Image 1 (cartoon, one colour):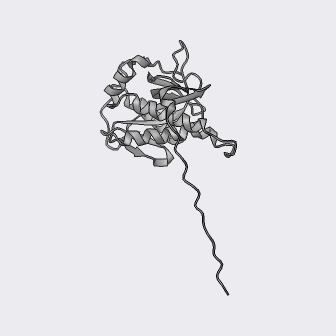
Image 2 (tube, rainbow, N blue to C red):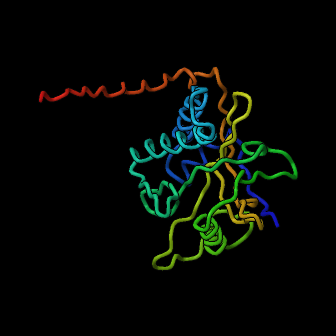
Image 3 (tube, rainbow, N blue to C red):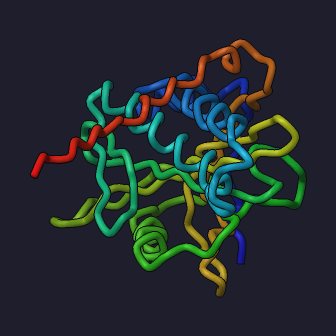
Length: 219
């Protein structure tokens, strides 16, 4: 089963993000640019599996850094890195999506690229229980119970050919393989393009290796 999503295209993204989260698209655009820059600077000397996590990992770092400066809270319970809005009602996690991410194609929906863990699946189930009302009233929520967590949103990212497609979306359905496939709401963000102004950022200079001098004791 796939949820029918309320869809906002990139020209409406800032308005919707400000309404829902109190921030515009800039922290998410900057985070993706930072992640792509690190991925583009990968080396043949990296561990074989390392480049696969570069885009995701550095997008997470940059996004959490910028949102924390806006009084969001970073949480890593069960190794699940989210950012939570100052009022505690919404959380965002970065996940890698498939080729439908950040695109609007009739009859198609993005899904997470890999199988998600128990905490993600529980939060998706919690989303379904928290949301109520008309299918297109994407943010109608029943009264929260004591101890309930925030509504989980996903910053889906997908890199291909120097472009990073991404969106902020509200998951409610997962398939039998524990991949998120259904969304109550999708907010399409502007595609990041290598060669754009954001790509002129300079990669951080790695710290020099520490040189340890060993002196032999006499005798």
